[in-house]
Image (cartoon, rainbow, N blue to C red; front, side):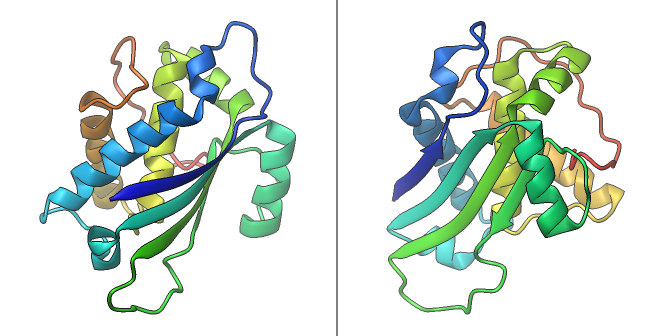
Length: 185
């Protein structure tokens, strides 16, 4: 399986941010590892078309609070910044047999919010961005968290993905805030 990743990393990077966080190869390797981990486990929910695809396509964009507020207002009718938005392409797609290339959708992350959350959680920006990208990816794969049970399952899988590797290494592990709020956490 191959991953065609469209990365828009023109967001407001700070001089102290690791440069690897804005590199295509970093995220391509990490996302591919996560997708293969999820797809290889029949116990984990994952669309069959994703498991069978030769190529997956998705977009990842790092932006600022102003841009994500505008997107959040337009698409979720919430005029506030959020940490991550996912725009899943598979939600309304018909089930087609033998599709070799599958569009998953787009993940948009606010670097401004990610930096604040990393500071609040007392962990690195690396860890926060990996957390947010994994959360967005799970939404693209059909995961949701309408209740505490679903949220707990999703958060546990995110922890497994982060602990399992990928190119963007976390520098430390801290407990995760599992409250459901406006920040899709």
